[in-house]
Length: 192
Image 1 (cartoon, rainbow, N blue to C red):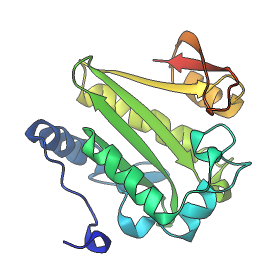
Image 2: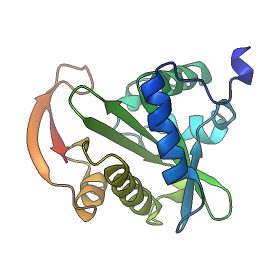
Image 3: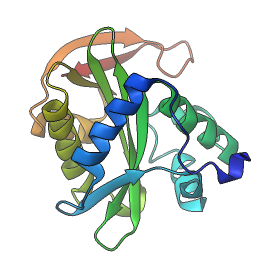
């Protein structure tokens, strides 16, 4: 199949297919609250998505701010997430507008799910990120009770810290890391 027709890449691992099927039925089946989730597809890699990824101010707490992202990079990232026992979802509001995306990557060895989220600038400050995060984190914890859901953020990212804390995530540790690969150590907060 040509890349441009690959709307929902197939995941190879049978275990992952079972996980994704459980997620689909438990999470993507119907709209709940102000947003709903669906698979992020190649058609979602459009000007809205790319403009937000390349908005340095909006992405200043993300590694994505290091360099410009083109459609090929975005497609590679989405496929990488989907091939790592994870999924990449679009977040859609009640008006059927895509307001952002989220990722979840399962580590079956240590029973952890790493969660990530991006709300587009045009839709920030509407509590859609908080709602999406809380809903997704709660649903994943319900569907996969043996797994811990975790996330990391830069210490200066007050908005994300507030989302995590309002979702009952607890700070478990701080790490120093050359987060932006520029030789400067940044404090990363790890929450579960």
